[in-house]
Image (cartoon, rainbow, N blue to C red; front, side, top):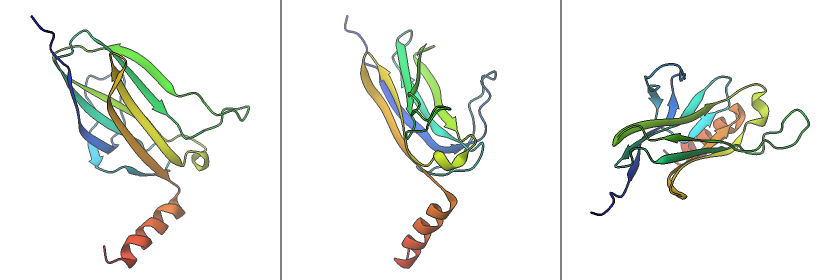
Length: 144
């Protein structure tokens, strides 16, 4: 009998309600976007639907855009592993903006891996307030 090939898809991404680690409830999508304002406590990420992968090790990783630690050294990516709980499982991978917000701007990359292969990936562009206004003005000038 052949092994089932895992099926992974991103079903929602963008800005979410605050995630509660202690709850079994996933956060609720507020806005589908890859452009995230750098505002304190804003939650963003994606929800993936994972099928045919029960008990497999899922590795998650969030690469921050060179955010420095207390000594000024860029922080290592946040990563970890969990086991897929069922053959039809939803998983939330996300982060939020913390103080100071000024150093959080840039591209954040979030990935999921199964068996050493990236099976889901999303990049988010975190913008400071003035950058977001410039982007809006750019598209407004083009009639969009």
